[in-house]
Image 1 (spheres, one colour):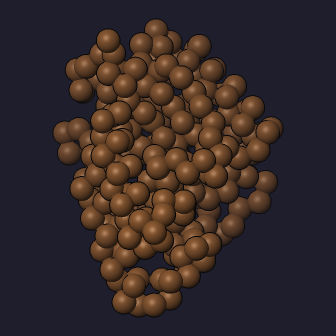
Image 2 (cartoon, helix red, strand yellow):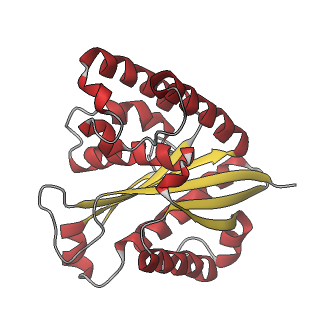
Image 3 (cartoon, rainbow, N blue to C red):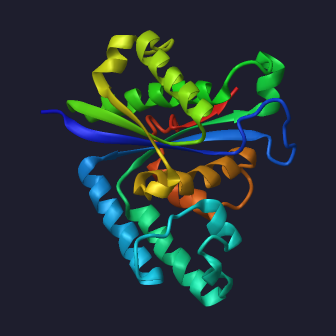
Length: 244
């Protein structure tokens, strides 16, 4: 019997190359790898926090809403509540058992080198799938990996499914198709409304990683908390891909 693992994928930034926001010229795809048992623990921690602040588990954690104190997070305008909230959230992000693999595309550099025709979401996905295998190899287990991605739109979702299947069929430069299929089992698209905890955790991590890639010298406490979760080997953060 294979051990079940999940790869939750969410994004930060706009994947369009037709116009680049010079204040945010980056697209990040963030993957969170977690075992079935670890996901159960993580879900319990997040839901316990939701019960504390809302009395139910219906609220969906979204990084942008939290930062802007909107979409159900208006209580964070109260500085005392905000301080306690972040202590609780940081505790979950620090003590939860998961690993991170991300890919950040620097749009201007990418356009100069490759033009505007490619789908940078697909490019990022191939990097994450490839490095997920590198990480899973280190566990030395018989693993079945399910990929769960947030829905974006009918056309975008179809393109994403095709990109995923293409990587499985052709592999990458470093990973052949047989090695891909050894791990990857199921691909699922889920709506944000489905309140998936794994996707919410991925969403919370994507922004601080993006800020770090944009400016490594900038103070970034949220990144400092999750840095130890990023896949690394021999002192190198292989789970923190910057491209090109």
